Length: 166
View 1 (cartoon, helix red, strand yellow):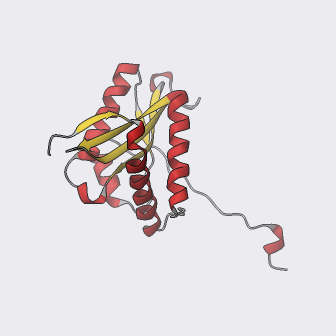
View 2 (cartoon, one colour):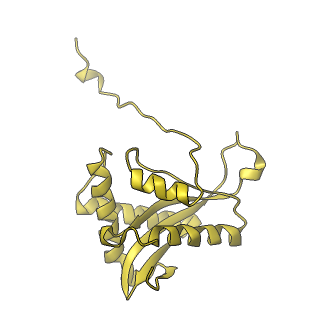
């Protein structure tokens, strides 16, 4: 791994991060996830990450030779009431992405390690994240980092009653 620098997001990083989020949205859409793939979707996602970070979390970038090649947004989160107290507080990773051309170099692992260090410093006892079904590369990377499945989320789309067959 080259000498990456992980640092807090700066205003100068906005366009590079939006490009990374755009890559992520398109990558997940190719795997069958319902994702908007227009540039505005990436901008909206960045604004959502920024709003959450301003209230209860943060955003970090991974830079190599002056170029932002990785990004993560996270927020502090309490455990649901059905989990033992030992599982609270925690950090939830809203987004984690590494530029397609920079994958396989350990940058995703480095971002996860940075988030884990943030968790330790803030007294969090866990880090959780989600992964799109079918994203085998991400799933493998998360398992390598020590993550294990805790839930499977499912959904069913509901058609308006006007679309129901007669």
